[in-house]
Each structure stands twice: as structure tokens, then as C-alpha cells.
Figure 1 (tube, rainbow, N blue to C red):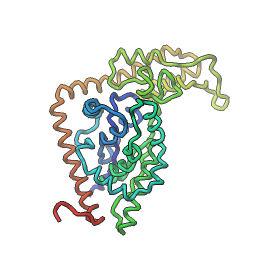
Figure 2: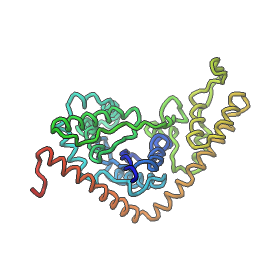
Figure 3: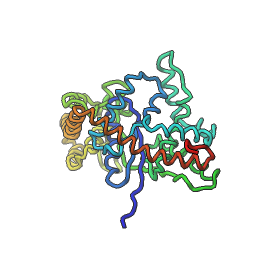
Figure 4: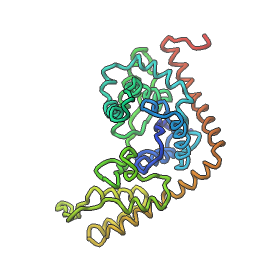
Length: 344
């Protein structure tokens, strides 16, 4: 009898175009995890409304991200849209009554995102939802009884909150009901802006700071060609005997390695260390690797877009199927906590 596979849960907000930082930092890992685990991936539009937004743009972003994820290799039966599974918010309220005010105030991302809101329109305000969204995030995770959650280090604090809530629930009701999910740290590269390699690749910094996964070949080549490299003499690292890399050059090498061109990466690194490699050749090779990687994604997305009505139906069905798990969990939670179910 084969051993039951562990459950993995991860979610992503629908914030528009997917860039290479998103892909290498999360989505590529999601695709790879499907080989080893039973995976559930969510597009969390309830979380997206904690920041200022436009309704039509949100709806468009949800379906565009759906196409992007499927084009990159996410299995459609693993994907759900959060607002199609309202049990998340109901469990989130129950968890609100089990999360301490003090631990929620310590969530660092609230401070960061509050600063973004303040820096935006003068009509914007910091919502209670923005403060409280880590509790809803705990519901996202625990409602599927996930064993593992792949997260970046900036999100590990939120997973710890989910574990605390699960443990508090289990202790309060004297039952080991919720699994305490574990962090699944995997090797994911931190991709920097090619225009300013001292900062993360991000859309908020402007167009020149990010490279879209579904960008046209010409645009990818142009952005890589304009990437920042060295400014001045390159020093030697006495310990390793290798030339030190500036942040810009290191970022180009990271993009090459992340694209899967390991043999080429090793050859070019050797050329860099013996000073025979030109930055023009490095940029050209990186651009070629990125075009090779992303062209199948762009072609697949075009196919999916042409069949978008069927794709929408498919994701609505997968959301409905995944919702059955959430409904079962919520029924059991209400029974444990003394709340009434519809059929009482």
C-alpha cells in the first residue's frame, strides 16, 4: 500500500503582471512541488481588497493570474479562487476569536503595507482588513489541514501565527484537530531589479525595474541589455581567488542559473574569473536563456486565452471541488466549538 502524500498549500495575490521575481521566487517552486506532494494553490482575492483597488481591475487580475499560473505549469485541478470558497472568511472569524491582539500587532507586513497606503492617495485609509489579514491567512492554511506551506522568510511570521492559532484551538477544545503546518523552505533565488540591483525586482518601482514572464522577446532582450553591471575596477577575493561580483553582475548570473542553464552558467563564470568574459556576451546569453524559458509560457497563455471560457469553467469547477474540503472542515469546527450547523 502506497504512503499517503503530504499536503502542500500556498496562495498568491492577484496583483497584475507576473515578473521573473514572482516566477523564480514562488511559481516555479509550486510547479516542482506538484511532483512530490498533493498541492492546493489559491488566488486570494479577499486579501487583495485589503489595499486600495478598482473592482474591474481586480476581476481582470484574477483571471489573468489564472491564465499565467496554468501557462507556467500549475495543474488546473489544484487551483482555486478564494472568493469562490467563502468558508475561508467564516473560519477566519472563528480564528479572530482565538488570535490575541498582541500577536497580530507584531506582524511586520502590516507596518510595511500601511506605509504604502499612506504614501498613496490622500483619500486612502488603512483598513481593519489589512490589520487582520494574517488571521484570514491562517484560515487559508488550516482549512485544508496542510502539512507544509512553502513561504519566503518575510512570510514565516504569518505561518507561526497560524501554528499558534491551531495549537490554541486544539488546547481550548481538548482535541488534536488541526495539523500544525510546517514551513517548507526551498532554495529560491532572490531576483533583483536589473535597473537597480540593490533592490528586489518589483512592479511598484516602475517598468524598468521588472521583467515580465510573458513579455515579448524584444522587450526581454532590451531590458537585459540595459542591465546595470560594474562601475569601476573589479577587486579580487583573496580567500577564494575569484573576482568579486557587483550586485548587478551577480544578478545576471543568478538569472542565468535560475533559468536552468547550469553548464552555460559554469562556463561563463569561469570566463568572468579569468577576465575573458565581456558583459555584452553575458547579457546576450542571459537574454537568450530567458527568451528560451519564457517563449513556451507565452505560447501556452495565448492558447489558454483563446479557450478562456472553458478555462473559467474549469477553474470554477476546481474551486467547487476544493471547496468541499473546506466545507467539511468548517462543519467539524462548528461542531467542536458549539456553533450550530444549518441542519441542526
